[in-house]
Image 1 (spheres, rainbow, N blue to C red):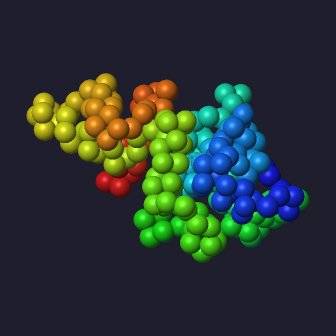
Image 2 (cartoon, rainbow, N blue to C red; image 1 turned 60 degrees about the vertical axis):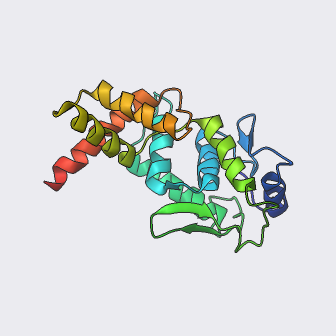
Length: 203
């Protein structure tokens, strides 16, 4: 993880927002965070569309197969990374002193206004988010699953097979112009089991 003391990361972030430098290059973020888990956290917070748990699920799925840690550990990792972006030291690494906020909806994002970082035109961040989505691919969430399941049940009048639901999720995503993550079906199928288990626990 990058050390916030060594570079002017505010200026680098401004340059990234202007499109002068890429957000991710050669497995390293514009904040010098190396390793897929670290740079994916940076890019997902930059996208401003994900909760802490959403981000944790993504890095959970990309863990080395010989060192799998539980989801709650990944949630802790994301929170520590977020804190490092703001005002807390991570081991011996200085914080970046950014403003990162979590909204009422649970979405975590950089607060560029509070950091007084300007975006040269209104579509700049939107285009940057598109770049991120194309780079990493879209991973359906619980809401996508519920929408697709409801659609399948409405068409078939009965519980649909998992492949039918996944196919519907893909159709819905493509209608929104989203490019799916290469291994999204495998990840989403596993997530669906978790979501269904969560619903069972509520009964």
